[in-house]
Amino acid sequence: MRVLLDTNVLLRALAGDPAVDGMRDILLADETEVYVSVLSWWDIAARVEAGLLQADLKELRAAAVESGFVELPLRGEHIGGLSAASGTGLDITSFDRMIAAQAEIEPLRLISADPRLAGRFSLFVRA
Image (cartoon, rainbow, N blue to C red; front, side, top):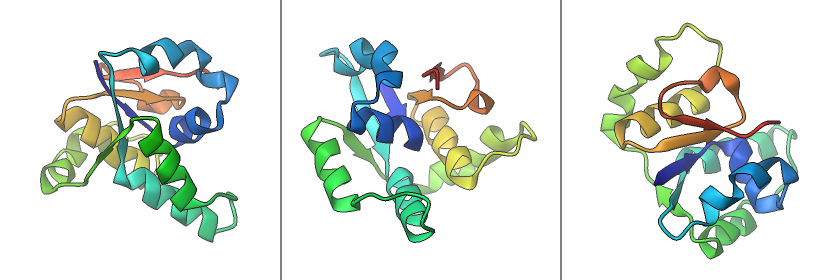
């Protein structure tokens, strides 16, 4: 299985948060490829700059690499997928919409704690 972590799940997974325990078997399975969008790094940097999060981006990226996570770049075709991902009329952030679009285009199963990102390609972590 190929999965994409949204930013909140990424942060929880790297922190060892018990909220991701239900997904741990999926994340650690040999056949699972875990992806992290470069948008998550941008999202985290924006949260740090706004004073909403205390984190060291370099340390987080190093921990993600050490965990075997694969960085997913942002490509033009992901932007084209935005219309499908944002057609719900829901109030979700641009980062969430783009990450959802990436999951749909690649295709990857999106692991999220946000029920607004529900869809045929999503798995959920209960907050």
